[in-house]
Image (cartoon, rainbow, N blue to C red; front, side, top):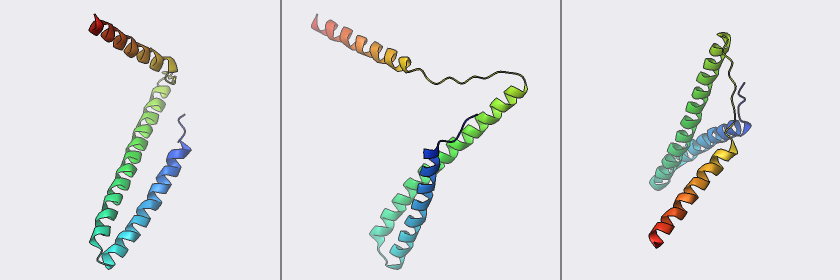
Length: 109
């Protein structure tokens, strides 16, 4: 079925290590009473935690999808996932370019 992207696993591990380092730096800043550093470390911590929460939500959605697919397969429903075709992007891009060209011609007339 769906395999985890190794890059997202590495990213998550890096973010977790970043959280630990940031907490350590935050503790040092508190001990040194360096309030500017405390503010910066808290901002960094909020950003990293936000990214970790996004990864967690993505994992939860993936697990729900996997469970749904398994349930449907048990009921005998065949499911085939197709990757998004590259020509969709090309068609949309060409449509936008054509409409821009038409707008330019209308403005010139």
